[in-house]
Image (cartoon, rainbow, N blue to C red; front, side, top):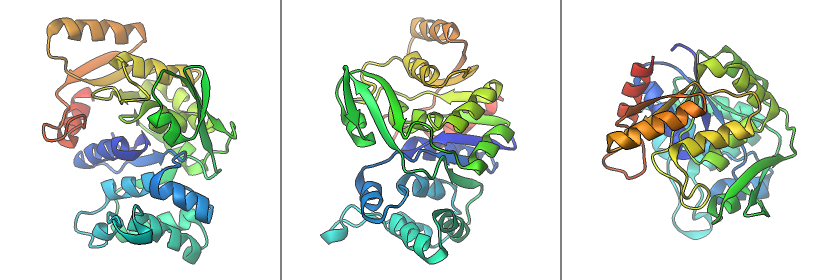
Length: 297
């Protein structure tokens, strides 16, 4: 494991990056660019800026804990007109103007935070996520995330955005490609909907591992079994095979056997392990995840 790549967004991607950092490797994060909520959504609308929030979280996950500026990148305003904005997002917006581009801003922020690895957007094309929920078209990442009802499919507009070449190259050269954990339809799958990214991941199928969510997400994946998350991934990325899955160990042997058989039907071998953070319901523990990744080999 010398050239791992993790794809996703939000807290889920941060956890997988934190686990890889504990293993002493320098991963590349490929981050979804469909976020349209909160501070990122405001900056997209006000400044025509790529959504910085998920990128900022990935930077913090790979940052040197001793970097003093790390505290500023994590600070969120609670009052006044800036309420809801994260200072790290505003710094990235400022650096985009000062350095002449968004990638240049990420490069400067990476240096200031002394990150181990790289953080890359999947695309720089302004994309919008749309979905079919209970037969109705829902527009926007936040609207899909918060919708109640079965999500049948999601797609991007424009539907063939150009990928960041460095992100495609990182996937092609990776010796491990991690998908998840995270919101399956609004964080993980949107990366695969960028055609060159999806094709590169499919071509790397023998090196792909899916890190399964600990529980369904209220709204977009309510009622999903662990294998239903993987089925959704496969349904949205033609040619993709996922040979290995890391999944929280069920409480009883019968459930373990059922999940093992269900994943096998999808072509995947499952490794059950204790992955949950005992102090945070529904969250993976980075140390436990790191140990499981080592065992997976």
